[in-house]
Structure formats: C-alpha cells, structure tokens
Length: 243
Picture 1 (tube, helix red, strand yellow):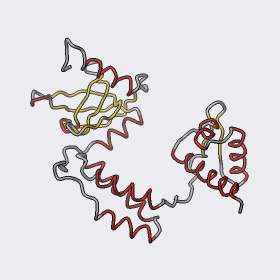
Picture 2 (picture 1 turned 180 degrees about the vertical axis):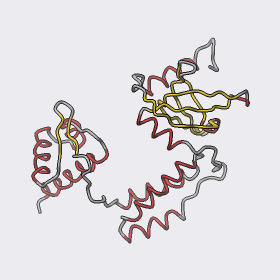
Picture 3 (picture 1 turned 45 degrees about the vertical axis):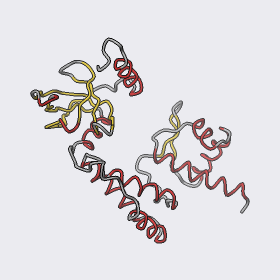
Picture 4 (picture 1 turned 180 degrees about the horizontal axis):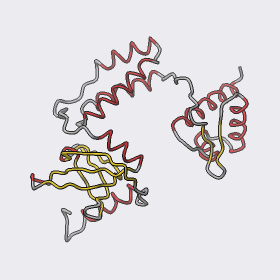
C-alpha cells in the first residue's frame, strides 16, 4: 500500500472520530485540521458515504452523522491510554464525588477495549503515579454531574445556598451558565440568579440542596471569556480591589 493511501485511510478514520465527538463539522474546519484542501475533504466525505457511512449535510452548517449511528470502539494508542490514567489520579483528588463516580465508570469502559499488552502497561503506570497528600481528596459536593446536565439542557435549577461565613440560607432559581475550578475554592458554578437578577458565583460546597425543574431558559448570549474578563476588570479596579 502506498504512503498516500495510508495517509488517506488514517484521515478518513480521524474524520469519523471527529464526527463522533462533535455534532456539526464544516469542510473548512476539517480541511484546516488535516492540512488538506476543501476539495479533498469533499472527496473524503463522498468516499465515506460510498462505504455506507450515513453522513448528513445541513446546508450552510456542515456535516453530521445520522442519529443513532455507532462506530466500533476506537483503539487507543499507548500514549493516549497513559494520559487518561494520569488524569484519573487527578480526578480522584477532585472534591465532587459525582465526577469521580462518572469518570471511574468511563475509564473502566475504556480499559475494557484496550489491547491486553497496553492494559498491562497502564495498570503498572497507575501504581507509579501519585498526587501530593497536601492536595486534599475529601469530597465536599455531589452535584457537579447534575449541574452539567442542566447546563447543557438549559434547565432552571432550584438551590438552597449557604451564605458566606454561614450568614443565612437563601432559596433561589438559577440558570446554570458555566463551571469554574480553582485549587482554593474547588468547583464554582457561574449562573444567572433569578432572585438577584444578575450573574453570581456559587461554591458547590455551599449548595445545601439542589433540584432540577421542568423550566427552560434561553441560551445565554454572554460568553464565559467575556464574563471572566469583566470579573477580572472589576477585581483590578482601584476603588474596589477585592470585588
């Protein structure tokens, strides 16, 4: 097999993998990613369609796989498997128990499709990676997965929130916007608070109760980058350095 053919087969496989991980992909995005022309991508898409892959095209938006179509499990390289195992140690130190549970389930499924030789090596690696005990592994929340689900489905959440320095509790409906992680405060939810009529940051360890509702909200036009930039601007304001 010629080198050109090998590269094309690798690219076709990679295109399928990309389509599994992203709902819509344009020919331009794919061309940029694989450093080929848009015309080459058109030919690749046609080749995949001729091979029986149900690719749909949304006019002006891009390509997507037909709903329900499944691609056989991808075989991870040894380096990719090692990266996942290393991240597993970090996740286990995370303070939200729901994230640990879901990641453990996902990593176990990944391990199941690895080649036996690779599996042996990652088991060895998992015993040779440690995280400093100075980083606490105590769990302080169990709502991260629920919040992520509501965030992507644009569902309003009702929360009972403990104020700073234990100053009272408030019940408030919120619109999940983004999640922020820091070593000092761990997981923090950025949300539009319908009680305060503004965006607020809520530490997950202070959320005493959380409940999903059937209420929907419109996607926020504000981007996370814009929010963080505005937050930093306020923080650096001379008249209010600690805001």
